[in-house]
Every structure is written in structure tokens, then in C-alpha cells.
Length: 304
Image 1 (cartoon, one colour):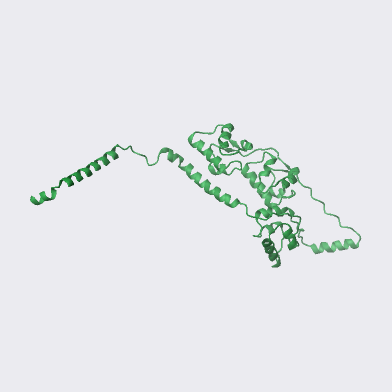
Image 2 (cartoon, rainbow, N blue to C red; image 1 turned 180 degrees about the horizontal axis):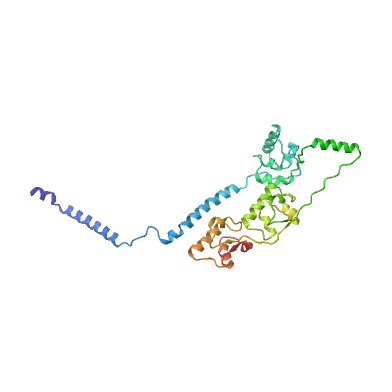
């Protein structure tokens, strides 16, 4: 008994410490019991989770797209009609190419390289896409043809016979409808090469169809001089634009439209999640204006 009493007897200081600890434990238990239960994920969080993930993915894609489309540093070019197979080093420099670019081109030719089509020049790593877009309309390549020697002999025979060769008929420039024309026909327009034609078609797909000729100015690489040259040959026929439902389209679809910025699409999603559906153009225009300028033609491409 004495040994047990020895173990369970406490000094005054020890009793105070024990009481204090017990009181703290009791307070913690009461605090846990009285604290309101908390859901791990609220209904609103679950509802918005997909939207948050979509926002994050769209931000990553936009950053990658901006990096891919970031213009490369290039020389200021002053192109004139030229044949890349016969042009001299000095003439390359006159057009505005750098010494490094000219050296690479001349090395390519010195090793037996030859340009059979306009696109062959664009395949050289030393020429950027932007530079090729400027140079392409000025490339002049004689058409390679089989039986050239035979035609040459025939030409000599005609000259001997006193017959003058007939000049080749100049091909008429077509009038095209921007909403139906294909890239093959587009390249028949002056100063429109294959690369620019593909950009016009790609912009038309993202846009949902042209409703105004001036929209062609928004195509990347389309400068005023080129636009003025082709304007007499372009038309817009019956317009049936592809419309986007701003209340149901996903983030990726909206942000890829040329007339919507990333911040404006975020504003649309915040409206849809927190305040309800967008009812009309007036409401959408007011909403988007808070994040920058609004292209009035956007009204032709949205529905509710």
C-alpha cells in the first residue's frame, strides 16, 4: 500500500499541472464538438471543377500557341522579281537578306542544290516563314518541262522557216468568292503564294466565314500593298457564317475565335457560372468591353 500511495501521491505543483492539462484537453474536445461540420468539397466546387481545369488547359494551350506564333527576328526585305537559281550573292543582299542567310543559300547551291519550285526556298532553315511569305510572290521560275530539247529544236526549225514563235496566252486572273475558294485557285491571284493561301483558308475556318472584305486584312502577313493588289479580284457571295453558342461552347472553342481574347472568354465563363446565361448581343458586348475592345462583326458569329 505504501508503494502504491507513493506512486499516486503528487505535490501541489504537479496537481496544478495535471489539472491544467486536463482543462486544455476538455476545451479541445468541446471545440471539436461545437465546430460545424465542413464538407470536403461543396456542390459549387464540384460544379466549377471542370471549368477550372478547362481554364488551366486553355491557358497552357494559348501560351504554347503564342510561343509558336511569336515572330522571329528577321531582316527588312525589299524583294524584286528574281530566279533563286541564277540570282547573285550581291542581289540577295540588295533584297535585304543578312550575310549569314546569303552564305547558307550560296553554300546550298554550291553543293548542287537547285530550286525546282517556290516552296523549295521556304524549306531552307535560314529563311523564316515570315520572310518566305514576303519573297514568294516575287520568285520567278521557268516551268520545267519534259521534251524541252525537242521544243528547242522545233523553235530553231520555225526560225529557219521564217516563222516567229507565238507568244503564250496570258492567263486571266480569276474573280474569287472568299467563302468558297480553295487554295489552288487563290494562288492564281497576284502576290498570293501557297503559304499565304493556306493562311487565308485557315483564318476563314477559325472565323466561321467572311462577312466583309476588310476582314482579309486580319490574316497574318497580309499587308496593305498585297491587299490593294488582290482587292479587285475578291468577292463575298452568299454568307452563311458558322455561329458559336456562347452559353454552351467550351473554353477552347471560344478562345480560338479570332475576335475573342483569352480574358474575354474568361469573362464569359464567369458570367455563365455565377450569374446565369447571356441573353443577347447587348449584354455580351457590355461584358466583353470590360476586358478590351469588341469587334462589332463578332455579333455575326454568336448565338444564345
